[in-house]
Image 1 (cartoon, rainbow, N blue to C red):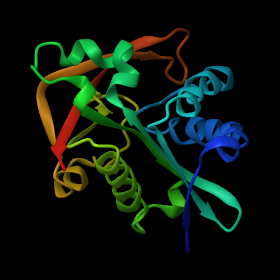
Image 2: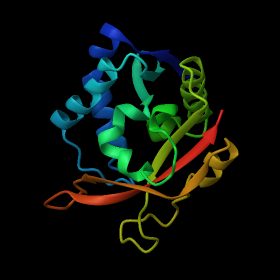
Image 3: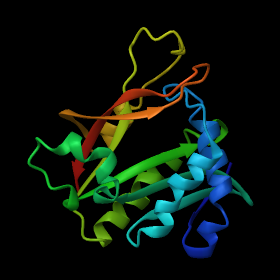
Length: 195
């Protein structure tokens, strides 16, 4: 299934925010996120990509249907969320580009879109003057009751692209899991590479 990538900025991004929000909610319902999404929260969260002049949003389209999206911003744009995780590292978050999220509908996985998403964000980071990029992944217990039997972590994919986990650089973020009454904090492991 041929997928085309399109950079979304300005009006095109503004007009697509609700589609992106719906896509994020749908994909993040899956393991390991189990996110019980909220459209209003998503709209507020996604506005940072409209407001940051150095952010990137790339949509993946099958014909005219949005089937995936990837985002990124300077890590400093997320300082309130993730600054504490880097406090003891000696790394300046102002020097790091954050490859925020990649979401892709299941039918379009395994066709190179994930690599294209990383390529787009890493190229943008370099063009914006960054030499270091990072992302984070949620940590769940191996024996979690919702973990699918066939689940295959993406660690090998990330390592193939040159990323390694940063020892003890773990953030904490809250969201409501499916079937839960309230938000709970989850640990997020940071991975990093030099460009």
